[in-house]
Image (cartoon, rainbow, N blue to C red; front, top):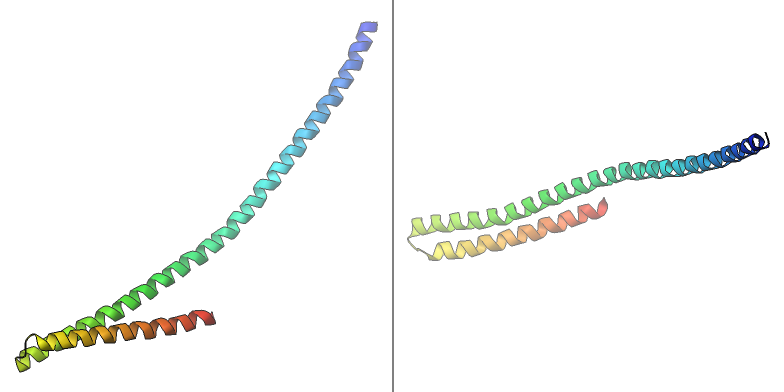
Length: 125
């Protein structure tokens, strides 16, 4: 009977150590869940930032396409006018050369003007 009493005493000690281990595991699980929930909140906040970044990237791409089309349009109009004057006045290739250079210059000026206006608009935002 003495052995049974000792076993019973050890059993209660085992239960308290099991409860302590279970409590420690529960605390650890609670901390891990809190970390995961915190990272999910950060992840949703980042998705908003990612959307803003995607919009900014799309806006930058639109600005780049606009600026490049300004330059190309200036060069093509200059080349077209030069070719037309060469055909009318039989001054080939001088009209094309002069108006191509004028078109390039006009395209660069348009790009600089448009980029300056866009820079001022982006500062306002």
